Length: 125
Picture 1 (cartoon, helix red, strand yellow):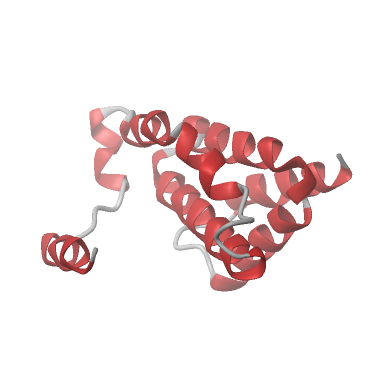
Picture 2 (picture 1 turned 30 degrees about the vertical axis):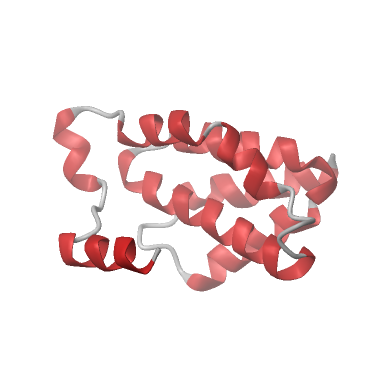
């Protein structure tokens, strides 16, 4: 459980940084998440709770944490042995609902993907 505590400390230290979050900070969070792979359910729950409770300007960096952990896990362990992606996918709808749930005054703080980029991404899938 020490690894989970270390991960939580890294994750919640995001609140001390002003967005955008640096690549180095994201790497630190990802490494501590991968180190806590034995407790992957706790790691996933921590990230989901972070996205649910954080300020609007930290919601997108919370998504970046999910992306970074899943990518690194798949890279290190392969798609078949990755435990993070299936666990994140269980509550992904609720996670996105929490992502967009904030006062209307703060909605502008959540960075949206520009439409041309979104279309390009959907064409590649």
